[in-house]
Amino acid sequence: MPKKPTIILGHSLGAFIAFEFAKFQQARMSSQHLKGLMCVAATAPHLNDTRKNLHQLDDEALVRKLLDFEGTPSLILEDKELLKLFLPRIRADFKLAETYVPLDFSPIDIGIIALAATEDKIVPCDQAFEWKNYSARQFDYIECPGSHFFLHENLNQEAPRIFRLARHLN
Image (cartoon, rainbow, N blue to C red; front, side):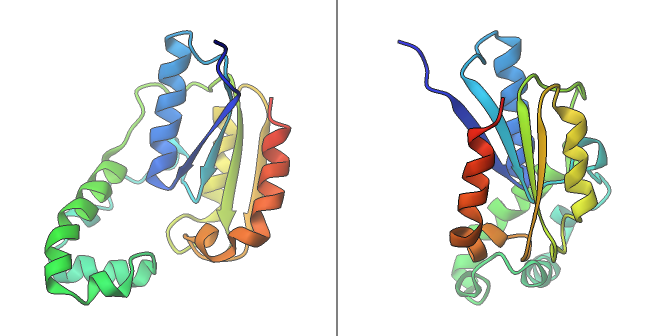
């Protein structure tokens, strides 16, 4: 049975994971169904700053950083028991993001759409635009109002534009 056309979406660290998945699928010659990659609020791989080391901050400093990023619900950040549960997972995500270096920087043979937020304190728009170097096909770039988590904030407004672009990926 043929596979349906697929677009992979990765937000922030998820864009690195989605990029590696697309490369893995291409290497296995099983990417015919992949139509594109959407990199949301994500720095292009060659610009990833592996010197940040947020994952090495003590708990108090890490919580302050999370407050600055405005992406973790205050319910979690204000509850010591929830913090015990979530901080190791958050720290592991930061470590993965901060130490990611692709083994292969070559472009993938699918289209890429990079979405950036104009008020993102984590990923500047120019770093998201650099995903243009990673597609051997079509590249589209969208700037949206909002912070790093702009899709949570503006999904109803941005979804139609995103879906319209996605339909035309090749």
